[in-house]
Amino acid sequence: MRINTRLAERLKKINPSSTLALTSKAKRLKSEGKDIISLAAGEPDFDTPDFIKDAGILAIKSGFTKYTPTTGTPDLKRVISEKFKKDNLLEYRPEQIVVSCGAKHSIFNALMVLLDRGDEVLIPNPYWVSYPEMVNLCEATPCFIKTQKINNFKLTAEDIETYSGRKTKLLILNSPANPTGSVYSQDELKAIAQICAKKKIFVLSDEIYEKIIYDNLRHVSIGSLGSDIYDLTITVNGVSKSYSMTGWRIGYLGAPADISESISKLQDHSTSCPSSISQKAALAALSSPGEVTKQMCLEFQARRDHIMARLSRMPALSFIVPQGAFYIFCDITKTKLDSATFANRLLEETGVVVIPGGAFGRDDYVRMSFATSIDQIDKSIDKLEAWLKKI
Ligand code: PMP
Ligand code: GLU
Image (cartoon, rainbow, N blue to C red; front, side, top):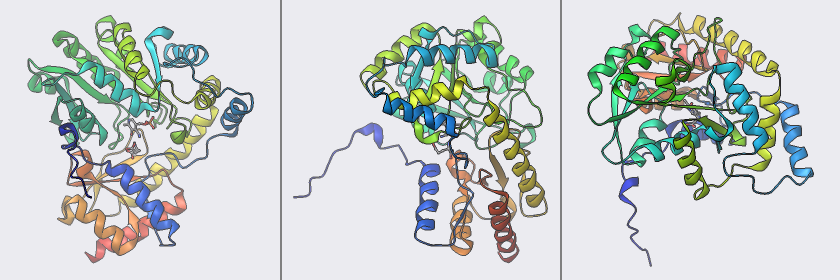
């Protein structure tokens, strides 16, 4: 008998993640032998470095395979606390740190403990696909702020003044940003921090792409810009992007103690600790001098320069220079196609996979990832170029 399941109301508004869906569709089509080139990847294409894998293997072999404290092992939390101090000028004591199953989980936890129904969350548009859905899952309300290409898609302090109201609880900031590659400067963050402190708006600062930053720019953590903003900031980071460890699922956050204590309770009753094995691997990654990350970043910068040089010869597309992360967000207005049609036709007619900008709130754009080899970039751009001439 087919039962008509009554699913929870809170799920009704939620869409599947198109970044994850398209990335796995590309992998599936490829494994079926189709001639597919994916510019969809939301993860570094490099293998996890051997010394990190070895730490995971050692954890298994030595029997480090049991529950750890919910918020992470003392060793890992100490190293994260030192990392925050050294790289981000942020003082988070170990008890202010929670290690979770990926930065996505850290963000979700933070939103779950901060948001009530009716609270509003400021989200600069374009945004990473999961932010609005997570806010919806918490039964709060996303409030989108459309940013301007001319300002490199960055939110300004004036925007916050204009769009915030009595119900505004939180701002989500992401620098370097997915999908645009924008990086906020210290002065821009200072202005944002000032207004958030004045209006008592919490800031969730998603810094997962911190280490993937180009042109000698310096990443700045908004929480380091004074005690008022520190008290309102939740700083999220992880090892997925900086150590090519997406599948290991380790993310972490630093927050005011009352927030991290609440997250600890939430995690007690939801996932418990993240994998003990992955924690050992993350400990090895974060205790290392960081050379692998620097090498990876140099390689990404060379690929970024290459893809930009190729795309800039196509009059149908335009873009801003990505200063971080590994995506290029292309304006497709001149093609007169919406982003889903563009992406579907490109896939069907050429085998090249890109992510429709609609997933990030901008239907006039598509996202291309350069987390793939120069050779694959060239092959896909050749196909894209020929296709654009035809349509
Ligand atoms: N934030 C942004 C902006 C991302 O692109 C990603 C990638 N999935 C994440 C957070 C989550 O990363 P993870 O859960 O793998 O740590
Ligand atoms: N963050 C990556 C992306 O935007 C990975 C996929 C996901 O977690 O959504 O493609």
